[in-house]
Amino acid sequence: MIGILSKSNNFLGIGSKHSSYPHSQIVIVSAPLEKTVSYGKGTAAAPKAILKASHYVEFYDEETKRELCFEKGICTLASLNFNKIRVDESLNKTYKLVKEILEDNKFVVTLGGEHTVSYAPVKVHLEKYPRLSVLQIDAHSDLRDTYEGTKYSHACVMARVAEHTKNIVQVGIRAQAAEEAEFIKKNKINTFYARDIRQNKLGRDWKKKVLSKLNKNVYITFDVDGLDPSVIPATGTPEPGGLMWDETMDLLKLVGKERNIVGFDVVELAPNKHHTASDFITAKLVYKILNYAFIKK
Image (cartoon, rainbow, N blue to C red; front, side, top):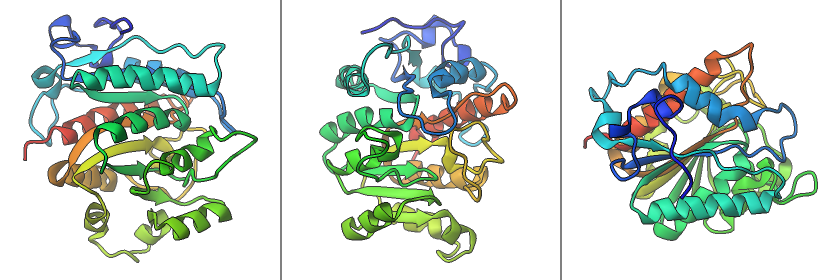
């Protein structure tokens, strides 16, 4: 196990009483992977930026009416180091750490880094929960078999996940290649396109339709470009016409109430000095998902 961060730089800036590994039910893993980004850069700086911004997120959540961090404890581990190793080696390093934590019956949150890194925690959770549903919030399908000469591109992460399970539910998609559209059709991937949501083609109860496609246990992989760029502009591949904050929180809250969220990752923030609010919003997003994951049913 790698080191543990102290109050000065851990998630939410909480003291040792509620952030030690033995006394924390939740563990934050920082995985600053940046090896295949194809447009905007900066994902390697995201975990540190999220942790820094989280110190300004309120402990009390007004929806769930609790201070989850003190109830469950949140331990933040020191960042993984991917310097001078290949992307597959980086994924293996992440896999081993997440597996070790999950074996201790902790709830794992992985902070990326580019979306490629999500493959590792998803794989670990699939091994523990064989009928697991993977809920993907994203602007892109990420179902290309290869991209720019590698099967481990950020544009291929869900294709790698699909090698283990086709139980993938995509929400917010609005950019894809023809091969991805064909893959979705051939493999019956449940994809909820942003345009269909916005034009009310799925009806007002679209969130319930998403829920109906999810099994009992759910892992969430959240690419921040799934949100509209007006919400989080600091991301490598922003796409217009995305999900808005409240409707996304409503969906995640519904999933938390009706299903069992077993883990999640948040990826693809690309910190930018001109859009520092994106760091805070992403930190807030992490805490909101945690509150929904542990919502009292």
